[in-house]
Length: 217
Image 1 (tube, rainbow, N blue to C red):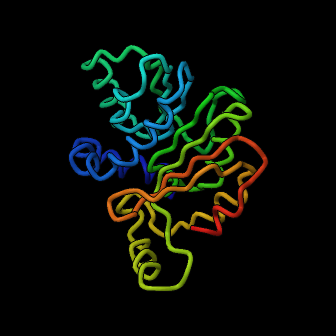
Image 2: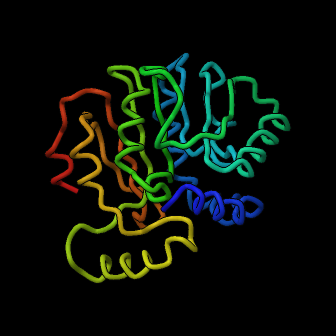
């Protein structure tokens, strides 16, 4: 989807986003942050920070930069930061994840939660996640990925994909092509509630790809 379509969709969602999506996306946010918060003093980029639901839950000694394509969503994130007195957010910036303006190797950790099925070119975003992450740094992706074998689930996902522009996301993106071509090491792949609809992928910015993990999914 073109970025203008995404912006239009999230302009509609902004006021109700937390109510509609907050609970269903909670497990992915918490499991990702639990892993990140096991370390100290990281500079973290959250791509698709949205209304900032995750921002209060980062360890206070981390430094957080958030980007999103929707200014309406970012305004709500800024309100959250101010209201909760969150002091470790460096900046919240409107930016296209497919063409980030950060310098190479700017972050220890890069997080992209519920982003890949929203953007026009997921591979371009994946390339950017790798580019701005330091060598040996961690990349966390949380998303719905489509079935890769024929069956009822794949048929359903392809049917929903016809409404992608209305929904603001597309349901028919498989995991393997995105990760196989990324030039990263896959550390873990974990299914998430509710009902295993979402997947958390922990990657490391290393060229040693763990193909066996992809094959096992």
